[in-house]
Length: 233
Image (cartoon, rainbow, N blue to C red; front, side, top):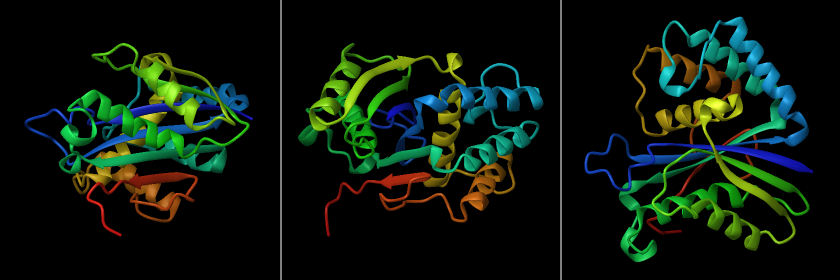
């Protein structure tokens, strides 16, 4: 089976910020069969046209006047059931030891966690194409290294590409941005009661029948991996 994966992140600068705006960095991935890509793109474009949404849509653009579009988008996402899946990892930046575990390299640490969000959903005999939202890296080979690590750890699967794409060029990457932003807002407890973003999050939670929070690995529709770096048992 051929699988496409669209990835984005929320609060990517937490490892380096002296004035953090959140507790957890969230890296997310949206998974679909390659055969469904064009059909899904057409459906999202139809929703944009119906609600007269021009230009790029993303989590930061959720507003009272556009809330109904984002709710309709999430309803459509939910209706696709396990044909359209989301998985994210939430990392408490206060638990990250860059010096001992990541060679004091913030970028290296970031991509190690990127590996974690992808690796556990890669299955033998499938082929994968991974599209990451464009990000300026200090080292230009970060995505090449990520691809190599995923390939070496999943010898029975095929990782065809891991490449960056600008979000304005892909409505599926924009949808991934919405899902990542939504998860990060709930995980970081940043929602203001009664505002548009909270209403959008609550709408998805009503569809899922549960809060957006840490889930077991077996959860396939909206999976949240809240990693614990403090150890314990």
